Length: 341
Image (cartoon, rainbow, N blue to C red; front, side, top):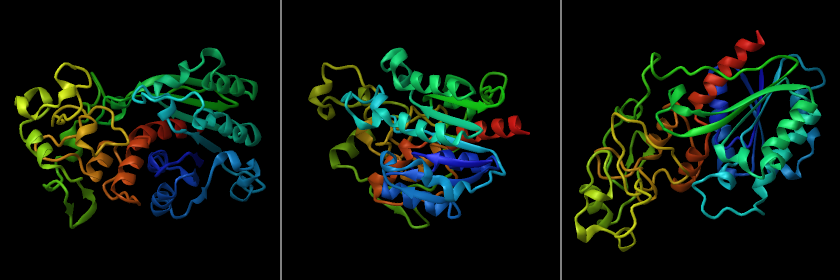
């Protein structure tokens, strides 16, 4: 099965599908750093760098070829920020809100045997039945696809996070189902933060492990170093002495994850594009006085330990936070491979 990874980012979806035995044929993204990351990990794949809105559907012709010998899988995991509940500055005119319709141009023209979409749960509620997700569902039906979708906890597939994602699978010319959970009650134990990053060497804030350039942690101010030193494993700002607290938190009990530490034997909350920033979520290391390193964030996202990333520290963190967790894609990929046999 050939994978065409639209909005590929650094390649989380392709990483999982590759592990499932699929052939990664193409990545497409507008971000240059993501392009370099994708190319480094999938050197045999063709990469299309640019805005999908400016691309003609025939751009895939040299990759697909004149005769299709294997099934095609189109992945349309468009940027989720316009629909995320984490985004408090949602703009109804954000051009990213209609990227699913751009992806649908390619689906309608090439009619791949399989389609995969992953996004935040909020996308299916935008504009109700006239929104982008339901419009895409109607297109699939008109084109002869069967499809299944649901909001799935990533932890059900070995991802050590409590994040939930909307997953849609579609198949042309056959029935389709979603993969069954592999982790949970009466199944494999859920993966924890300790399982994911407990083996990595210690690292001070602002430093980089000499044996792994991605095991790099952001610097912390003296004030934030004092704050995290007063924060117990799994705890947050409620443990700070009065003089370390922010004025805006004196009468505000929400956003309790901000300035929090992870707990070793629990799952992380959903990683974001600022997953290495101590002040932007529960991204503090469980016991070391620093935030997560890029490598630790990538491992919590279930990227392989040797996965390569390009760009500066903030860019690499953004790529990791934006990615589809490879373990989730692996479960989907294995499921699709079984269906295609």
